[in-house]
Length: 242
Image 1 (tube, rainbow, N blue to C red):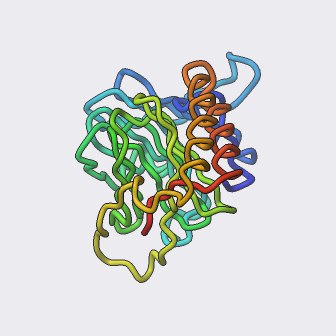
Image 2 (image 1 turned 45 degrees about the vertical axis):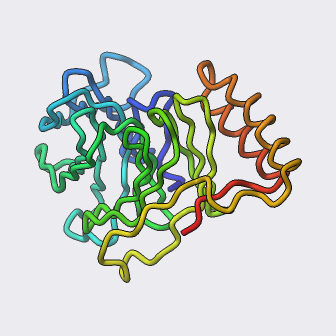
């Protein structure tokens, strides 16, 4: 993640930049509110309001200074996901301009921006989709969960994604590692149950540790995902192959 971007405690709130001192709130009224960051409520002035979604906005993140969009200057972009089955990209400080609308084919439950490759990893109902926010392409589509995906994180050092779902499972997926400049079409879906570990003992050990981590999911999703990552790292991991 870009060091100038700070995530707050909720997926519905995001602090965009230390330099700009702004944060955005996703709201049940279908709107996104960008306010000045301050420890005093009276100084949290409303800077922008983004309107366009047709359902509850459930997650939002900030994309700083996209290189492929030089016309944005230093403003960056806000990215929002909604129950209306769309992801929208808003140009910061452009009077509420929505630059791009992606139709996801399902309600967006969570997402994370992978700055290293410039792609958005989104939980869309039970699936995970990797989007290019410049072209609108879907680079990868992962299937395997049996219920909605609640949380996602990226492990850039291992080139992996970790997902937590309401089905009680934590899954580790091989990250998309292609070149955004070279890909022009959608790629085939991959299932997370392919290439199982050769050793059943190792697999059972990993599942046991993951189950313990999953038991913490409702109270502390971030801690549960981290525990699962460490559990799988100690043994052979279940991957979705690209």
